[in-house]
Image (cartoon, rainbow, N blue to C red; front, side, top):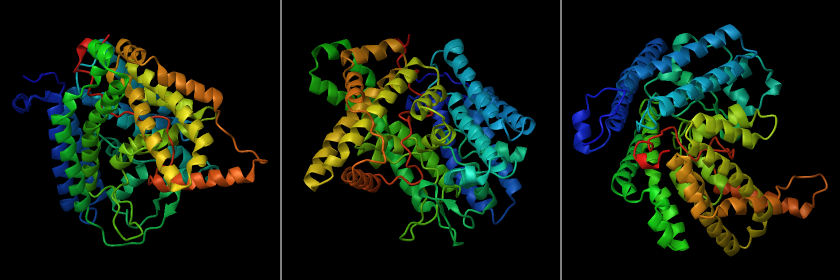
Length: 520
């Protein structure tokens, strides 16, 4: 029988028992399906052309809070407390320094909640808990605080094109603020969206305003007939169905924990270990594909997520998309993988940390990502390893990539090798994130003799990252330029061309309850 552990409603316990899944997971999926139906109703009957933005804000907020209380019970009050205090800080402190105060408070409040959930109440009891939505709300609180600071305090000439496009020029009302943080489309699984995008959607101005394009440039969108999101929604629901089917039928047969099984470690050959490492982590990804793609479909069904038209006049519904599966699975570099995984969190880390860091932006971004994800020791081990892998991968590409651009056969060989190395390195890096605890994580790395850690350190010692100098050889510049063009063509990433120093993970911490024997 499925576990009855939940902080929310037990109304669906019979269904939980029938499908043999934890009640909190059943609550989450059913609420997301309800949100999908509510999104279709919202777009049909509460369209911006038919009702006021006030009504749309009220309905979106009430539906979101209902779903939150259904899934998490009174713990959902944390969402309102965190949002309410952050709003008071913005009003009282003022635009000059409120972004820093909101950042410290929101991240601190999230961390306290994560510590109490993990170490005081129960170490990883629930597979879907209230800290997941709080992670998204923390992103929204901090993003909006910086956007208001940029729009109401800093001068335009001090801003990057992206910051200028996202800058908020007036203080939001309390209703707008709570609606942005707690609307039903993103309360359970996100993804993060910018405040300006959300408000233009609620007010029905999306087709009348310039929108942020690639690399922060504004693409002026002329008024056109509103496109139907139905094709995009149907396509994403098909992906959801296939991902869920894969997760329920195959993922459980390939547990990541088997990588540290004593018999497996003692008897398996190195090719077998490498193959199983890759396959087990590959099998762990479909549940994230399901959750994030369903969240994207919900936003699209409500009419949110339209990002204009491509060159062929086809509507693009990827404004709040959180991943690109094909690019993830075919990644030939750490950058390409990270750019396409948890995209909106990557953008958040870029905008609030990486672009604003005065020193060591990569390291600072990894630290922020680790703190934001939670307090399990495995998270920090993953991000420490990720720093090393990211810097080593960058050094390798900067020093070697331009030698393998031509002829095409040589480039194909290079792409195959880098795909293999990237997939193994990503899998090696994220194992502690899945195992959570220190002891099993070190057991895994010990069984691999810390080989990729050692390789990463050697790469950094022998192939330091090259910096461009004025007297640099012209031929080398040309080679690097051609290499960059190939990278951009291979990895067209919409809004995000930033190699964020994180995002090998997700908002859900749903693995913690399944393997108590691994916890310390």
